Length: 314
Ligand SMILES: Nc1ncnc2c1ncn2[C@@H]1O[C@H](COP(=O)(O)OP(=O)(O)OP(=O)(O)O)[C@@H](O)[C@H]1O
Image 1 (cartoon, rainbow, N blue to C red):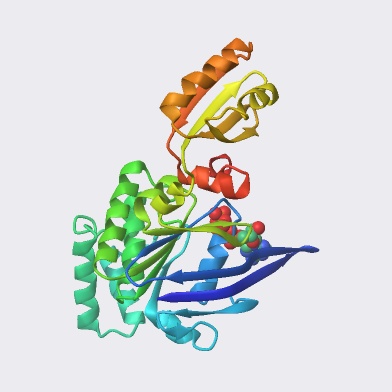
Image 2 (cartoon, helix red, strand yellow):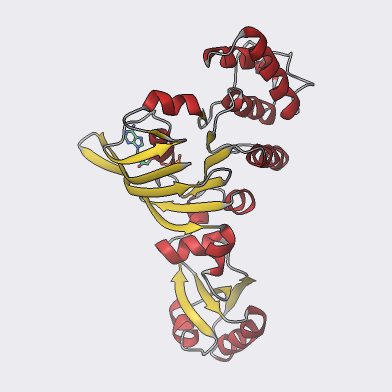
């Protein structure tokens, strides 16, 4: 559904050049939810803006929904929907009026536009508020309208930039359900997020992006399985000594210092952790915290970039 190779974009900012996207390759299959996961400034929005024809790439090629991005941008635009970051509907029109207007902009006849609007209102659970003006809506209700506006012309691909940013957990869960429903009805979804939980729970496949490059790509399960073992994080009084002490332990596969914690990947967390604690205790190293968990997408990010996504996300 989307095939991009070598997409590049840089911006001039004062005297500096920011290389926002540095040769990005992507393939997105029809009917999947594909996530671009990365920290602030990783190049996710710029990638989305290029794939939706809003920003012209400096280099590279792509086809989106069967149309060439560079040669036929208008055709691409007809086949996609895009919901921008922070595009909260804030108008004095009602959701129904907004939806009809949007459908008319895509060339639908008045009667057809009204039918599509009614369908979207039913599908997105908006019946209770669709005939009130948008300004009176809650954040979650507004975001639903935004997404309904993105799909009212039945696009093949829907692009969502940070769709749940700023939403409370309940509204976020509702929106995930709606995105899944769109996917199940055959729409391909490409979204950006810096929420690890969102990428994990919602996306069929994820590209982890950092400094304008894809550093890893796969299903959340496969990415996490790539880190074999459990992760033990220990807060200690003297990380350097603790690392010295534990890194040669036979159960420890990798060991790194991150600030005042050491992070170890071990074979069997539950069995290995008590042995590690005993070694620290015997050596007189004070322990301030301990956490044992199965690998998360953050551990994948850390393994690929040496930094934690959590440190940089909202
Ligand atoms: N119009 C612009 N002019 C100058 N620099 C820009 C412009 N747009 C983006 N950038 C820079 O390009 C880099 C990538 O930005 P982008 O918005 O694509 O990142 P992002 O991953 O979407 O981040 P966020 O999660 O914060 O939205 C950043 O360093 C950003 O400051």
